[in-house]
Structures are given as structure tokens and as C-alpha cells.
Length: 307
Ligand SMILES: C[S@@+](CC[C@H](N)C(=O)[O-])C[C@H]1O[C@@H](n2cnc3c(N)ncnc32)[C@H](O)[C@@H]1O
Image (cartoon, rainbow, N blue to C red; front, top):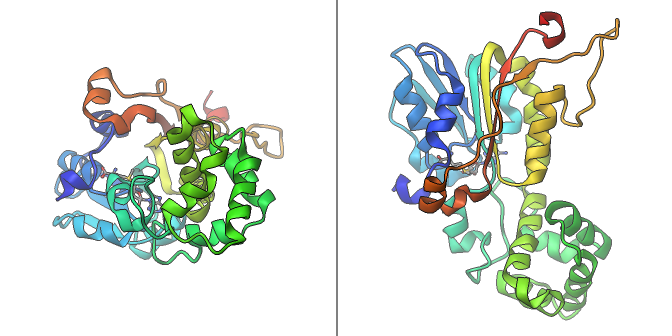
């Protein structure tokens, strides 16, 4: 079941990047089908531990039957508090594989995919209040245009937003196909499929507040990861990657290096190697790996003081 749920991307690269200590404690922030978690457990000894997070109740069906493993049904933005709840204050490594799983995309009724006619939902967790239908039917034209511009870099963002507004005057847009139909006339024909996917991506990011969750989680890594511990963070689009890159370089998601009272920069992570992308072989086997970028860093005491 887990094989069809999701094929893990850059699996051996992620596990290698974590440089796993057999008796260490690790976190998989995005459990999904558990592909990465299983590989981490294989490297851990009897006293090692793995905590995994997933906010989607569907992921619970993949929970691993292993005494070293705990699956936490929560948004990873609560990383520190959740770990503390489970009696853990620091860990030796953290893995993240952002975005949605193949299972979420391929389950028609979740409304993530342009391929199926389904209710406009797109929530990764049923606990989220706002659905895609809420965004599409209640946001102003300007707010919609901003989403399409910011989260999908769509040049015709305003026309798409206007088309949605026009269509909803004759009744709420409640299904994926109704949304596709509403925007059809303003998309560039040769790029229609790509733009449809971009429209859906922008709405999905908004519904799940994906970038806010990543921002909130990243800053907690400073407190949670022990010195010498590793973070392996895999992004699928430039907005996620920018946050990760800024954080690794500056220990802040806005990329602005903070200084202490004496003017010394406060830096807590050291980049390890260059960003890793999928090999030609993996691209051939798993097209989803196409846009993956894995960045790795090591927690240091304070980079400035070490040098
Ligand atoms: C790309 S999939 C991960 C796949 C996994 N690495 C595997 O090998 O099967 C991302 C998963 O993370 C979950 N997820 C995304 N954002 C999350 C968040 N902020 N908090 C908790 N889980 C999240 C999704 O529900 C999804 O199951």
C-alpha cells in the first residue's frame, strides 16, 4: 500500500545527508507513505529513535510497527512543543520533504488535481478551516491576483482573478472542473495545462498556509537540533527553497543576519555540500523528483565563534 501511496524522492541522498548515528534521535517532518522514515530506521540501532510528523490523517495508515518509532499527527509548525510533549528536547537530525504526496494528488475527492472533477477542498488536514472553495469564492480580486502572482508567478494573475470573480457572479464555484472552466478563456492556449496546475498550486499553498508552516518550523530547528546534528530539507518550488536557503545561510528565513550586542553575527548552521538534485536515472523512474532540491546543513555552536 505504501509503495503506491508515495515513492520517496532522493531517498539514499537524504539518508546519507543525515549522517545517522545509530543511537541518535531523528525527526521525519513529512512522513507521508513512510519511505524516508523506513530508510532512517534501517540505519538506527536498538536505542535509536525516530519521531515522524504528518498532518494528514490518511498518513496514519502507514504508521510503522516499530518500538523506536512515533508518528505525531500534527502540523510540523508545532515541532518543538510536540517533541517536548513526547519527552524529547533535542535531536540529532531532521528531514523534510515538503509539499503534497502522490496519494493526496491522486485521491480525486481531495481536490488537489486538475485531472479529476471533485469538490474544491485541497486541505492536507481536515482540521484546517479554509478550503479551496472558500478561497475561490470569498477572496477579493486583488487578493486572488496576489496569490497567483506570489505563489505561482503567473503573469496573467489579474485576468485569472477577474475571470473567477465574473464566474462566481452566477453562483459559487464548488468543483475543480468549474474552476478550470472559469479561468479557461484567460489562459494562454499552448500553456493551458501548466497554467491550470499553477492556479491550483497557488490555491493549495494558501489553503494549507504552507510557507508560514515552513517558516515557523525552520526557526525552531535552532533550539531542537543538537550541535553536530544535521538538517536535510527538500523543496519543490522556489518559494520553499528560498526560505530554506535563507535559513541555512543566515539562521533567519528573511535572510537578514542578526547580530549580537557586540556586532557578531548569530549563525547556527553551516552548509554541507551543494544543493542536490535527482539523477537522470531517478528522473526517469520518478517524474515527481524533477523539481526537488535538497539542501543540507549542520548545526554548529555559533559559526562566528568557531571560525
Ligand atoms: C512529499 S510528501 C512526503 C513523502 C514521504 N517523504 C514519503 O517518503 O512517503 C509530504 C507529506 O508531508 C505532509 N505535510 C506537508 N506539510 C505538512 C505540515 N506543515 N505539517 C505536517 N505534515 C505536512 C503531507 O501531508 C504529506 O503527507
